[in-house]
Length: 307
Image (cartoon, rainbow, N blue to C red; front, side):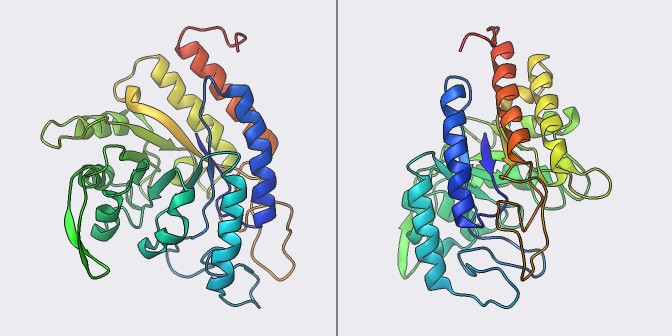
């Protein structure tokens, strides 16, 4: 389960969250592997705050300060990385040199997963790479990305001819789209069929379900409290042996110390409430982790009490 705040701000709250999550990891370590979201760069559909790497102070009166952002974000990653493995989104490929040594997981976001440079760079990395379906919900774009990232490539990079071996740890992330959610049986069967197509030669076919984004819309917008429903639904489908769900090996969850989100302003709260997408609060997040661990026990035919 890749879990944590939508955006890593305030950095001290991310560190507090990591300390709590690390304690929970000890309780579920034999059933569920937790990876902390530390997203320091934010993709924007139009305009908006670019994340703490570019603008460490998100207030409207503040300006970009990338030098400060690099130092402060790396310090946060160094601190939290001693507690848990870390995940980030590969937004700007040239920033990798600053942070890749501290990260255990990278995602190609819905706006980047079809970009050739992102795919080629990902094919040369040694950590797992999650490839999301596109913003419009097109699953095939994500599967194409998985196939491409798993394949070797040669390309120009910073004045050099680079050759990669391909990344066999690349996998699909289903995050929904403008057309709706895509963790339903029809979508899962379609994704499974494409991932298992022998012509694609995808090794270790695997799906991670993003319980957030367009998979947790309530008709009026994103509702973070629907994320547990997404996880429960998928786990039930796995238990029932419904086609395609056997490939689901994990989840993404947006979670922070406080529930919900707040608009960016000069007087924002700094107690761990998201300033980008709304997140599940800590108490609900903790319940979700434990209930998912129990569901894994049931899936494996074990008693949830035998930790």
